[in-house]
Length: 361
Ligand code: SF4
Image 1 (tube, rainbow, N blue to C red):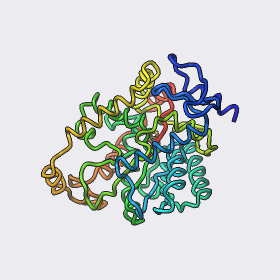
Image 2 (image 1 turned 60 degrees about the vertical axis):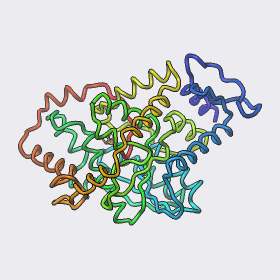
Image 3 (image 1 turned 120 degrees about the horizontal axis):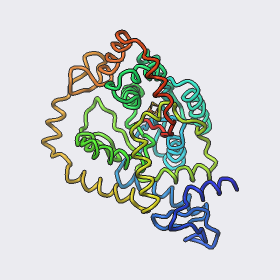
Image 4 (image 1 turned 30 degrees about the vertical axis):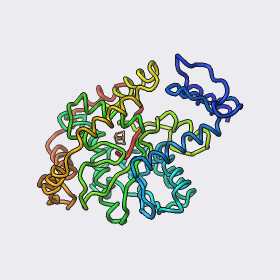
């Protein structure tokens, strides 16, 4: 645990609060310092604090009802594995859990993470299903990447990847007959998404975010919930270290450097380090704004009435074909019509890699 404690102290170090003294709740030496409080905790009281917030988030946003069947979107990374542990620890007597593991086809990265995810399911006695992009769409991220690098107009790899993943999650949640899908999104993810939506003037997307994602209720969509919505990422790292929770952290997705989100992450981390509590403050603002923006029942009915089913895959959409099928079509066309621009690719691959922890968002 010694090295873990060093790691925790390193991640919770703040310019204004470098000293770690005794726990706020007992006389033991504090091992973690949460600068936004400030809170100083020993390992035991940090775990209590962390777990209580998790349960409070579920109660506050009414995320889980007794007897509901929950499908955990499990990547093998720290967030989704922590989610699996916590749900299993506190809700297994009242609910049924299973896991969906999606293999996007990234050699040397996702295949290893999938192994960890499977191990964790076995350890926690949770049934699981593994679905790959290859079997669902006959494409892998390793194939998509060069196509996108060739043509920036196609957007980002993560945007493609996320859309295909959401499609799989929704489809399999229906096949597996579950009530909800739980994802490992944490506070940092949500704040980054909020700021990104502001910067991109994307009101539509902003309204769809929240502890329970989505704007309209439709029987074609399975509800997605985020029980770690109010939990800072660094505290998840600490919780994993204190509780020896095994998760995949050996490598980053080799395409993560393409994500614009990295810039927002860096900017917000700088703010948080200089002004502790910034992320919670942004989140509170986001919540208030969403209350104000919340569509009327009439508007929700109108949106719902516009929903159709995709003429290709049958998933719900407000267009003729859904975004996933549109993307697959574009990729296939791109694959046929364009030759690889190797020179251009090698220049882009030389960019410095940055790590973006992946989520089933
Ligand atoms: Fe997909 Fe995540 Fe890799 Fe982006 S970082 S390409 S979302 S697996």
